Length: 251
Image 1 (spheres, rainbow, N blue to C red):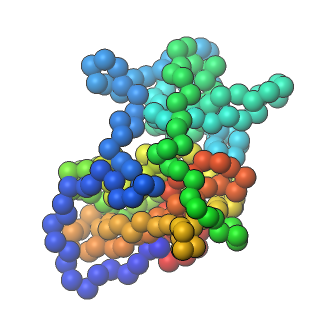
Image 2 (cartoon, rainbow, N blue to C red; image 1 turned 90 degrees about the vertical axis):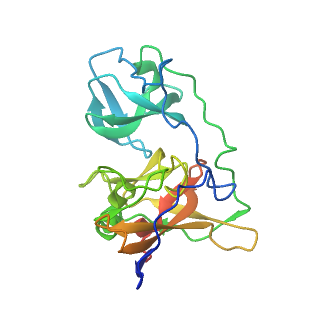
């Protein structure tokens, strides 16, 4: 949900907590790093390799070493050969972020996805929500949010990062490990195609599992805006995570 601006200025933001619930846990390394703590790059076996969204659509091709998210793994059958392949989540490539086959990498890390960080909820909604990536982008643009220390950085941390990322007929939105209201939140674990269905998670009382955070219009702390994230999964998928509610037509 994207709420209206508060009437009064919000107090100065505090540093973000490590987690807010068993479903929304931050403070994870997020990226693979080398022994010096620098983000690690994984070389390609060939000159380039295809990138896919979570629906298996090719959305681009990586042509340089890629960086990978820790804990993001997926199995899909996309190469036309018998059997499924293992994919890792590559981010900030020359063609955006998406799934890359592990066997396209020279020395890939093992598939290390664990369900305990994003556990299965008690129940789920019977009626799916339809993703509208462009509408989400329009609702979340011009919003900024604080980093783990409670500061709005000079670049990044934009609301539209959690909405449509690939304008056009292959638009998609990110499914997140954690909402960006916890330390190191906002890291993607999958991408959901525009027009696909999202199944919202429900708690023991059949209420949607949500997180409401504050973003700021144009990065101005005097213009706070409430933004809601829903816990759930892609229809037909088994990977649970967080989606900005603005992407499914609700305000």
